[in-house]
Image (cartoon, rainbow over all chains, first blue to last red; front, top):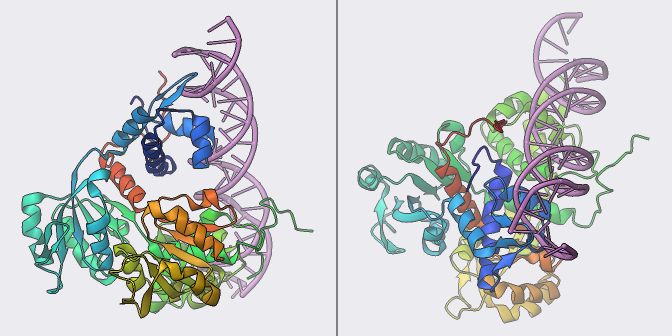
Length: 223
Length: 223
DNA sequence: TAGATTGTTAATCGATTAACAATC
DNA sequence: TAGATTGTTAATCGATTAACAATC
C-alpha cells in the first residue's frame, strides 16, 4: 500500500476482476499464486498483472509469487469495498427491483438505505427490507441519512429533474442506468454509466462479423 | 460503406453511443451536424469522430458535415441492428424478467423468441408475450427455432452445464450476466459480459478517490 | 469564390509487452 | 546455493490527437 499517484482508468477497471478471480482461487483452496498462473486463468499477460499491481505497491515476493488472501484483501481495500457508503435506489421498475433484491451492495462498498419511486403501486411496499418512499420524501430523507450515491433506474425523461434534486440534496455520485448524460451537466460528480443496450448492439456487431475473418490487423492494401 | 478491414474493439464500442446521440439529434430536429459540434455534445474530439467513422467509409461532405439521418442509419446497419437474430433468455429471476420486459431487443438487432427457467413458480407463466418453458425443453426448442444467441441470467453455478447444453444446441453467442467465463471454455463463441458488480466496485473506487486530487498524470518524484 | 469541414497522414501520447536485474 | 518469480525499466504497439490538403 505504498505509492498512490495517478492510476489510469484502464488499470482501475481491471481491479474488480482481479478481486473476483482471487476470491474464487481462495474459495478453491489456493493460498499462493504467481503472476504467470493468474495470467493464464484470466487471459492477460503476466507482465500486465505485475505492472497493474505495482501501481499500488509491491504485494508479491520474488521467487514465491503472491499470497492469494492478502492480495485479495489489499485489492479490496484499494477498491474501498470495505466501506459502507450509503446509497439509494431511485426508480423501482424491473431493473431497480432486480438491483434492490439481487445486488449485494454490502459486499461492494455500499449500504442500501433507501428506495424511491413515484408510482402509488409500489410506494409503501417493502422491497429488500426497506419501505419504498415517494420521491418527494427525498429532501427530508437526505437531511437525515445523507446518501452520497444514487442508483438511477428511472426513465431517461425523468432523469434531468431527479438528478437536479438529488445533487441539491448532496448526492455526489451516480450509478446511472438511464441515457441521461449526468456527467455532462454536473462536472464535480462521479458517474458510472450502465448502458445495457449499447452492450447488446456491440454483441450484434460482433455476431455479424464473427465469421468474416478480418484480413489481419495490419492491412496494407493501397495497391 | 466502403472499406471494412480490421476495426479495433475500441472503435466498435463507441458505435452504439454514436447511434444513440444521432438518434436523439434527429428527434430534436437536427438534419445536419459537423464532427466539431457532435464532439462537443459527446465529450470526444472531432478528430476521433472523423477517424472512427472513416473506418467504415466516408459518410460526410466537406464544407457541410454529416447528414444526421443518413449517418444514423449507416451506423445502425454497420452494427447490424436492422437484423432480427433470434435470441432466448435463460433464467427468469429479477434480471432476466427485467430484460424480457424492458429491453427492446427488436431495436437492437434481436428478436426474443424463447424464455427458459427451471422453477415451477415461473415455468408456464407468460412474460413479454412468451410462455416460459422448462430448460429441459431447450433441445427440442432449438431444433425448431435455432436461436444463435442466449442471454444468461442464471446463477453462476448453473452456467457451465447450461452453456454446454446451449452450445450443443447450436447457440454461438452469449450475453452473459453470470461470472462464468464462457469465452475461456468455448473459443469459437462470441461473448459480451455484463458484470454489474465490477461496475459498482469501480464506482466505489472512484468515489473514494474523487477528492484526493491525483498529483498530475506525469509524476516525476524519484527525488 | 470564400468559408467550412471533411478525409487522411503524421505526430503524440498512453498502454501493453518484453526483458532482466534484484531478491526471496 | 540454485531456481523461481517479482518489481521495474526499456521497447513496442496501438489509440488518440493534431494538422492540413482536398473539396464541397
